[in-house]
Image (cartoon, rainbow, N blue to C red):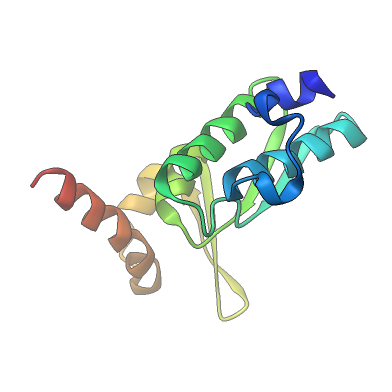
Length: 132
């Protein structure tokens, strides 16, 4: 158990009660549980950074990348494009129940589809704020 907690970066919380864990720690415990149950080759993350502060969101993104290094894959369902850009190589968007976009990062950033531009405007806003 300690090794799994070390893998997800919360070994120091081994004696904590659930109510003592932060939101980011709860997410990492959930990932550790999936690792304990089996040796998954694919992970499905549903809004893994939703409700987390930027520091914990970044920690979860780094953990997702670290876990995918050993040939393991992942799918992320998210509305946080900024976090998806950090970890993904391929992007798919559903629009009106249909696949509205399927492409790589470069295609995503240069799309002219209005419904996708709304999502990537978050990235442009963050880039503008970084340059202020």
